[in-house]
Length: 343
Image (cartoon, rainbow, N blue to C red; front, side, top):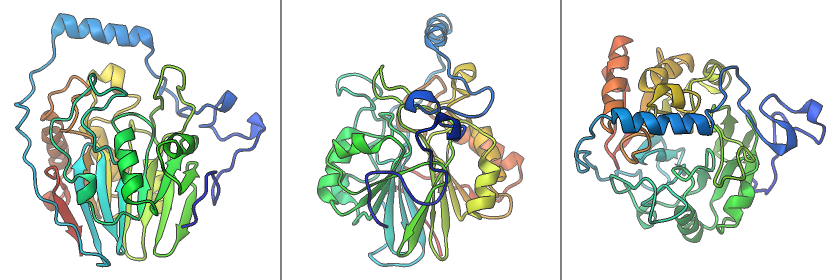
């Protein structure tokens, strides 16, 4: 895969004329969700949420030490096949065709621009940066602090300087400032390949910002990683949207789908940006999972971001899975640090 600092490759390529922009390209260089009913709740909604929490409270959480950990069982260098290791939240190591691909590597302690405030990690990462095998490719879905952690990016850039980073449009400047050199920016549906792997950016329903002044100035996306034998879909951070079926038809079938299941309550506020567990199972089926592949639920059990109890997402996703009468062995509810493989 050839590195670059600008977007390129197959797929839609917006130019300077606003009339030619794809539907997720908004005016003045900003991005947007192109589907009806996906408008984000503004300050009034945030205020309403805060009042409701004060008046009604939130359900209790389990003890902080309630989530078990596992020791990773990384594939040795060059081993063919497919294995995934959940490192916590959305961070996952995908080992495919002898290559190591790291998705949304938030390995820090606090999902915040400052270390003294914001959601703190409940469970240590499944592996620290220095414990990871040689990483060849790193995927970022968007710029929120629970997915793009400055300290993690700097540490990864120092340890794996030859790794290529694939990021959505508008995000190269941010990661370059953190020490990354080999960057590929991608629009939705763009594919880039070389050697044993191809990656494609997929639509997602979310938003971006790292300050009060940069809302939606960079894109958000999911990723599909394809080798000669295997395909993995990492949906990034997303609400339920109508493109999952097209992703499955165009880029599948998938051996594993990594779909977010947490940070969904209150539903009236979070629905545009985060799936709940039932929607995640629906998205899995939309993308072709009825008869093939595993679901690896991510984006839960690591940071307290919203109102549902921290241990509720896995219970609900299991119930939704069983309601669809899907094989139990294809639901990979992993412990932090656990590795699961496909022959």
